[in-house]
Image 1 (spheres, rainbow, N blue to C red):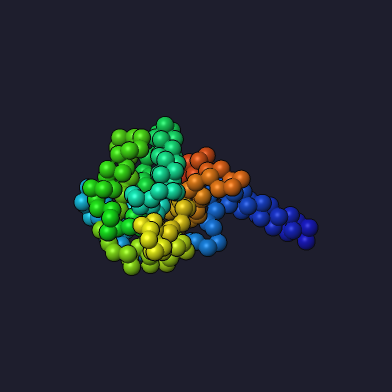
Image 2 (image 1 turned 120 degrees about the vertical axis):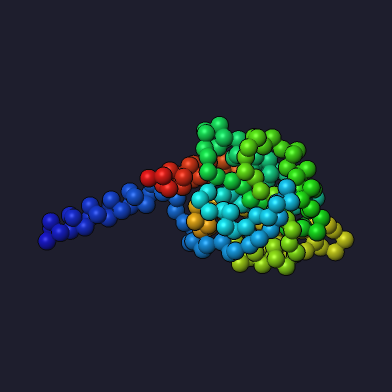
Length: 203
């Protein structure tokens, strides 16, 4: 009996070690991202199928944003630069506009040009859909809000999280895209999680 209990305990510890080495899926996620077909900053079509085989970081922004979007994009740029400095490949960034009527492909391309993004980085700035699409897409997949501007304003309400998506299109977890109260932007955690997902897929 004692021997059986010992074996069970060893198995439990081994399984725990395996789980701790990966990136834990947050309980509110684990779903696979819905199909979509949109337009990027180069006026090319980008589809859900184009995500296959890469790890992605995704956020929701708009170019006229006067508050959270500039620091979000600056922080995402930090992540990209850190990944590039480590020689990490097979990842990309998806930034969906929450103001697609304003954010044409050209506007999105110009916006990204203000940031120090390493040459060759796959950063898809996405638009070419209507408001109903992006509102439903954000809520259904990421449990986050996209709401129209208050009266007299052009500032769309939206979440500030970054989302980690694995090579199969499964949403794994989220992170604050900006410093929030006593919580600093999780640069090291994001970089480590992207590395871990890529390492797991190569084993």
